[in-house]
Length: 177
Image 1 (cartoon, rainbow, N blue to C red):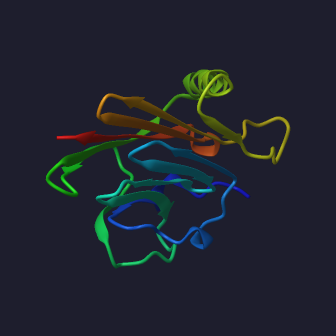
Image 2: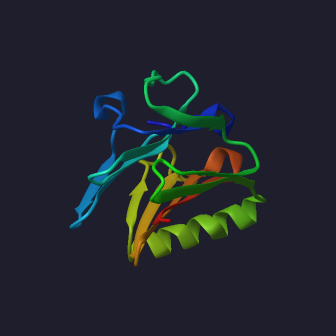
């Protein structure tokens, strides 16, 4: 499957789980800790990240504009353009912050960044390399990393779009206030 165009991507956040059958999943990783569970899915349009603890749920979705998604529990949504920062408190004890960024690069710089993502992703995190459509061209990759610290989770997602020399990046923090 090919990547959609970057201009067709949207970012959504929900206060509930979103049914996994809505998405084609290339890779899935779930981590269970004492006080939370986090699941990461890599999809054709990016990712679905689900965080839950005994007090609340958060589901972060990158999807295409025409993707059928629920309206119930929708906290925010926007198209991917430039850089954007959002913060909300799903409950008073927690804060969710996200930065979304679209970065268009020169072909040479894009190839270098993509190579670094593949190199770093092969050592840690979750890395998916799309099937090559043509052996002479770069293929898209998706990479996600979850870092846990005392009272904070940091989630980084990088999705490449070689036909546009573009990287879509999200950094999300879930922390106790």
